[in-house]
Image (cartoon, rainbow, N blue to C red; front, side, top):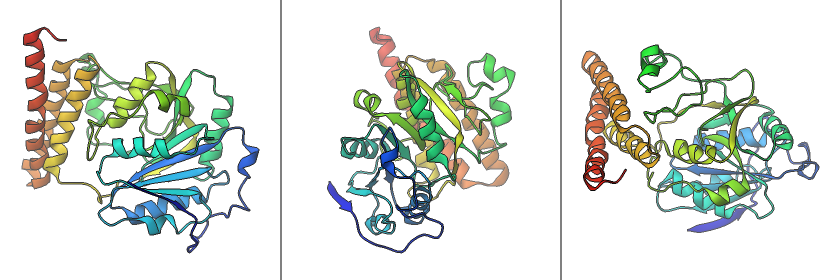
Length: 335
């Protein structure tokens, strides 16, 4: 692993405030650092960093953990307004990259946040987040930014149906982790709410929480549901909140992703691993995966969508190891 402190000069992004224009970090009671795990998304990373640099209340440090095929160190040098530490990480894994970033954060930092490289903070988001933390009681362990452009439609109507809730598959209440292992999405909340899980793509945590709970590096590569696993473990000991006034936008990028078959395989494998790890309902999880797979397959057939077909095939393959492990555990009396 290569670590480099970046202080180089570069072109300013229009609208980004200089450190002289920003609120002095010395005025804050708490110090904040962000860890950014990135892979093959230089343009999205540049846009996200520009949204950080443009904040009236910028972070005290940004740690970029890069697993790109072509290193993006030059992007980190574009914004001298930010105090950036650049780490090269050879193995692509959002979970492992975040763990490495946590270890690299300066020792005087109180709060550590995570940002996905395809996220963009709304103006004043950090200021609102820090205002929340300066008043937060000690039992609050993490807080999420408020997603301003949630995905609408799709399977949301079915997921939030009474039948899905009765079966323990999903619920209309935001921020829950269901017996099936599926998490309910938050959307854009109108007031600050407390939840059972937080997306790691835009969240802030007490440092002491991260000293006790690390990301599970079973979730390698794309690391699907690694944030649900991490935050759900934290929620067993601390309260978690979504801060309504601290907005962000997510613009899902294609870069850094693999094919539909791979995603389908990881989607099923990781979900079942999470369910078994936390003692949730394997039968409900498999029912949920089966429903998702059949709906994906039906859509793929109707629209001649090879990507949907690949995802459904990946689901079939991905669910097998977890089911075999469940059978072995049942035969040996392990719960």
